[in-house]
Amino acid sequence: MKVMTVCHKCTSAPGAAVMMSGDLDNDLLAICTCPNGHRFMVHQAHSAPEVIYSAGVRAFAAGFYSESVVTLSAALERAYELFTKVFLLASGKAIADIATYWKDLESSSERQLGAFCSAYFCATGMPWRTSPDKASFRNKVAHKGYIATREQAHEYGEYVTAGFNVIISYLKTHYNDAFLLYLESCRAVVYRKLEELARRDPSIEFGFAGTTAIEWNGTGYEQPTFDSRVAASSSMINQLNC
Image (tube, rainbow, N blue to C red; front, top):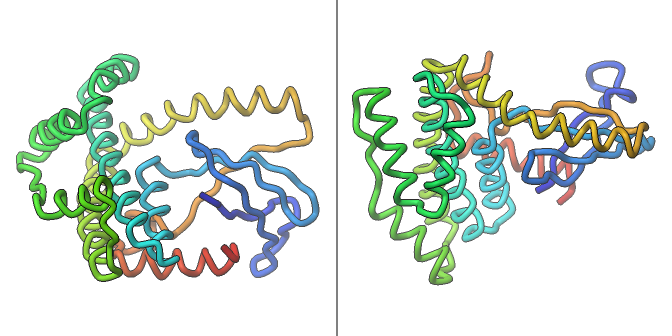
């Protein structure tokens, strides 16, 4: 997916931003080049589930409804993973041990869901309610080639957004220190890649990027709705001209 950010070398005042874009990889990194030739390795300052969610919203905004359903489903599954890992970290487990534990679950989405449901219940005292109808719909789209309509994809987007609102908001409200510590541990690979690239290309610089299209509980932002995220992403698509 494409990301867009400001070139800090060219932008000197609000309202005079010079934008640049690049293609994001699995480490949430993108090599971006501005119109004046400045190159940055840009890291998305969000968790992976939030970034994947943004990709699903952008697919919907661009009219790719089945693709949106599949991507939003993946985002929700990664939100389950994020919650479980942050909860375990907040409970005193070491990051390396959590990684080993989760690796044994990677081949089974059912086991991952079970781990999340247990962690969520321990954290909140409330059971996590899944929707068999939504799961059936997602499987039809992902595995049987069912072509989703706009209305169906929109309903699924609202379902995923509601789940995100609960999961991400709870983490940032109750486990924010562990949440930030987990994100920093994920960035270790980013810093290693930066060092490697800097040795090969000293001209490239490093920067962070974020987008209000995927902002949860940030200062000055209300809890998002699917429609508000679609509107924000539509604006981004227009700016990227893609």
